[in-house]
Image: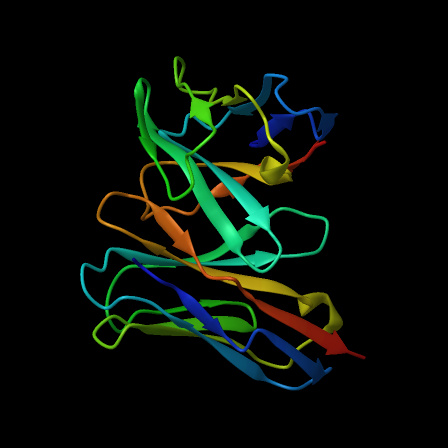
Amino acid sequence: EAQVTQNPRYLITVTGKKLTVTCSQNMNHEYMSWYRQDPGLGLRQIYYSMNVEVTDKGDVPEGYKVSRKEKRNFPLILESPSPNQTSLYFCASSRLAGNYEQYFGPGTRLTVT
Amino acid sequence: ILNVEQSPQSLHVQEGDSTNFTCSFPSSNFYALHWYRWETAKSPEALFVMTLNGDEKKKGRISATLNTKEGYSYLYIKGSQPEDSATYLCAFRTRADKLIFGTGTRLQVFP
């Protein structure tokens, strides 16, 4: 089944404790992206990747890192999480860049206390 | 700063009503406009990707039009059903391949 998977789905952590949210797709998509969803603000793009080893900042990259060592995986790293990073996070992929529909993962709800 | 605006923010309609909502985006440097449907507790799902001025797309009772010169797209739902209740998001693709989302129109259809 074609899908985007994210892990974990739910995470409660403390300020400053490094964490990684994994994202994997099995559709051989070139383009992958991370978004965060906050009430009243819509989906905001954190980072995106056009291909392996090619990543770029979205609108809200501060406090996040990503890597794209393999086409299928695009982990999101929070080196030192803070409470303002409490949010719902979505990973998405598409065949190529923005003229193709994005397939979203199930979301990761992160709470930083 | 590129801004994508959607209106109305929310909409309540009766089953069987037809409805439409608007997405406004920058008219310069247009590349693509996406529409997604997002049901509560699920992930957004793609409805349409539109790239050409005058594009019209249709999927069942849902259709969309695109005017890139004036920077707007309309989404229409004909004969709304309770299962159409969801948030409808549009997203504008920039030259740098970023996607900028609007805040969505939340539709509730009452039986």
